[in-house]
Length: 160
Ligand SMILES: [Zn+2]
Ligand SMILES: [Zn+2]
Ligand SMILES: [Zn+2]
Image (cartoon, rainbow, N blue to C red; front, top):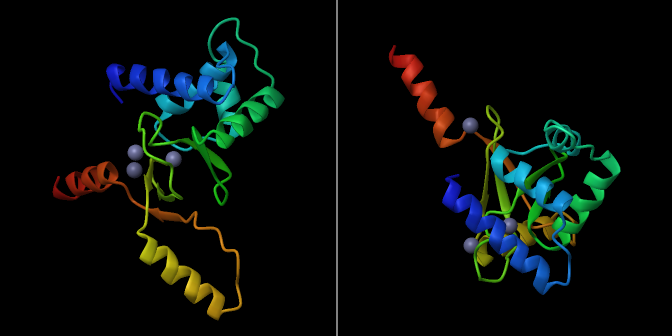
């Protein structure tokens, strides 16, 4: 993410917090900024580690968990349940309503893309699930694959 995009996302996140009556404190800012900069899924432990990598910062893991919960409620971040990791929402600086999301997770570099399946696709999934006796299924799918960048670098190494 470029510096301009980073500033834009941080400003939008602050705005969303203010609108929701949530204070965008220094610690909260720090957690979000770690996730934006990582551009990959991180565990709560990894987030705490990165927050504390700078000098003088001492963020307890409990604070990180609380902040992550709060950000999840605001749709600023998402938890990938299967991987038990967190990722920054791709729509922080968007003004549209947040739909249910699906996540493509790169198995090589942990880069995550947030996508939205069509209503028809989600409906098809629900129909298939209920035929199998499953109800109230989560539309949040987490799908493993290989991202564009890893696919490309793989291609290069093959041609060398
Ligand atoms: Zn999102
Ligand atoms: Zn968007
Ligand atoms: Zn990748």
